[in-house]
Image (cartoon, rainbow, N blue to C red):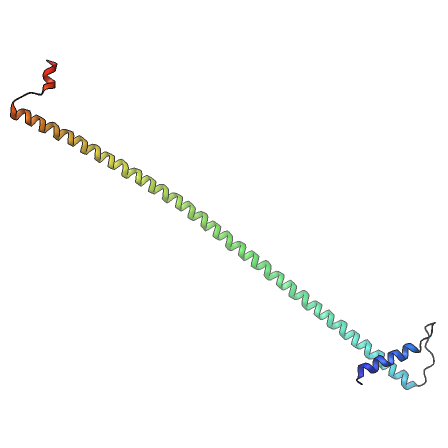
Length: 152
């Protein structure tokens, strides 16, 4: 039988000796009294140790919880900062994209305008060449254009 069960047996012995009024009956020997007082002191010390242990565990858990909360707050703050930076960069890229699209659109319009001018020049030259060829033909044949003769 180990020491813990002795404590239990002595407690039961002590409890059996309590009367209805709460007073202790006469215990036979001083050895029993010393033994019971030693048990009470041991139980008190064990109780204090257990209370201290629970208190220390509670402190450690509270400290760990506080540290975990601080880490979570730090993490959330950093995430928010990075997400804000990302959003800012995305907005900058969208702005640059819109500006670049506008430049491209303007270049396309400029190219189209230049092409139209070149077409107009070619058409004008084509008309001049046709006129020169027709005039040369009339000179070579010695005839006059019929439209002009219709006016006279």
